[in-house]
Amino acid sequence: MRNKAFKGILSTFLLLLVISVAQVVTIKYINPPFTLPMVWEWVLKKSTGRPFKPFAYEWKDIEDISHHLQRAVLAAEDQRFLSHNGFDFIELRRIFKEFMDRGRIRGGSTISMQAARSLYLIPCRSVIRKALEAWYTIFMEIFWDKKRILEIYLNCVDWGYGIVGAEAAAKSYYGCGATELDAAQSAMMTAILPAPHRLSPSNPDQYLISRQQRILKDMPLMPQL
Image 1 (cartoon, helix red, strand yellow):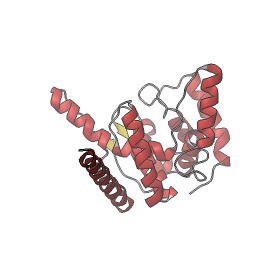
Image 2 (image 1 turned 60 degrees about the horizontal axis):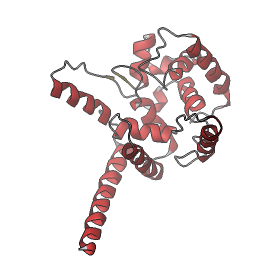
Image 3 (image 1 turned 90 degrees about the vertical axis):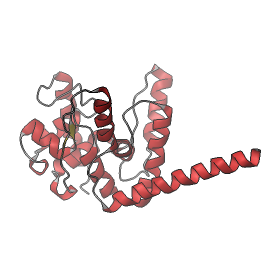
Image 4 (image 1 turned 30 degrees about the horizontal axis):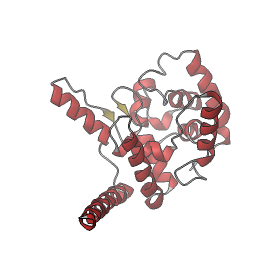
């Protein structure tokens, strides 16, 4: 009985492994036409009879995305992106120390982890989702280079209600393409990423302006992929 249970667990693990690797390897060569959060939103709206407004989503190769925006997201979201393997243990130690000292917890997801959840996982908060986020991050770091990871992130991250990716965000907030974004626009767009459904470049408050200025200050220190 115990041996049968072990074989069942092993078979499930191997199946999940094969499916996950196939998903990641496929996206290494093919630009995703949609993300799982987009599909999930469509399913929810259809199942409840609510009207569904198609997402603003348009793929852009990283060469066609402003280098200002690339540097802005590195400065704000993951300054050690090029030096870690998907998990920033330096930042995780800082988060743990802050929690022990002040009882305050904050997110520590890298760009790789955010790309994984933006593409492959439904939007919810759970331990299982966090584990799957780490699971996909491992394979993305194995099979993709950093340029591809950043490209997927820039194209698939949630940038507001119905807005997915840099091109849609640039058009929605500034009426231009992602390639035309200047440094100030890039920093402001990036500043909303921690809460894209609450914050907006169209109506920045003092917190958002302050965050934009910090990002602008750090941007020149960031590399261009």
